[in-house]
Length: 532
Image (tube, rainbow, N blue to C red; front, side):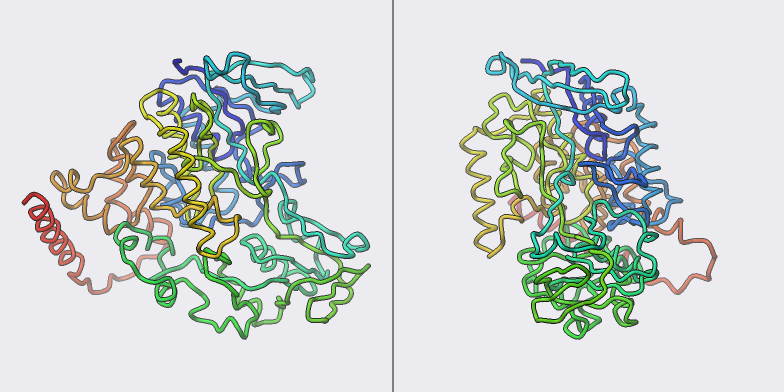
């Protein structure tokens, strides 16, 4: 059956790019959003929202603007290389305005239920029940759609540990998803449970205002935002570096942004207990080590028990006169409107083909966008998922059989288990390899040989340069005429917000030209060998 009307649930990063992808593919999207504007978690509100997480006011992106922006609408070059919440929200609003996406959105609208239509087996259609939240009409209305894109993200279900005695605590207990600013904690003694991005960010912020901050953790890898020469850390993400088969231990040893290489984390109490990406994760934070060495943050072990105004640790130590607990213990996938459609296994993961499609949906008219945990920039991954989904809806991209999809899912999950990882990792992906997987499905993965034949300089940049999302607009559906210009002006966009004072240029080396020459020769030799 031909797909035309598409329902999109949620209008954050995933929802916005899904609307645009539908419009690009000639489909008719309608997006349902609970809030009164775009942005999802980036739409900051002073008050916590039930079932709707928000970044806190001082949040800064963990990935640089050149990788964080969508592939055919760049973050303005005047913006800083890492965006604070205010500018990230502004960028999303600019994106919506540029492509006139608001016309497709019904704001202040809650999706109450998603279900298969009575004739779903013959048509692949879906029925969505919605309710207005602005007081204009509380009645539930239903509408049938040809396809659905679920874009509510994975920040709905807060994970809260069941620590003995927690119910006795007389202070404030707040989940990191409900934390907003430091103001309520000025002069307080605060314990932060967990060592996620949010845990470190909140700990650092509170350490400037609270009487004392404790962070309860089992250790972690800490990365700064700056890499070689002060460039953004993620500038090292390239196709060339992805091909270097270095063992993880060696790769980490020489990683320019890993604080663990510069600071003895055993002395700082942050020594991780497992393998990065398997048993433990890395966090991005520029200041936590400085706040620890000044005593503003004290690192402690796991919490054993909580009393009225104290916290006892597993080693027996007791922290007295505690005023607040911040639970930075993460989130779990939650789809309350689609309980009969999407099964969340073990509270942490859903089994999807390419982290997007339900393998047992024979019509492939349902796509989950933004559920994967990305080791890198999130917006371009959501965008690529949406591009693949609409090509499937439009019948221009075919999926394997249900059996083949199930097999790939099982193999991926078994691979994670063999590494000694928990099921929590089942939905984690690596940025470049995952973008390539999806891009290959629709012909958007850059074909280096075809690019090299027409434009060797561009091919060099695509292979050795940072893998910016725009590389996936060079080929395939909905290419972008300015893609090459953006890829080749990469350094200019990076330097623009830094060039506030002109300095005399240093002596330039000719290494760049030498690398281009070597690249051309190697590429030519490989091509000749493949043809003989």
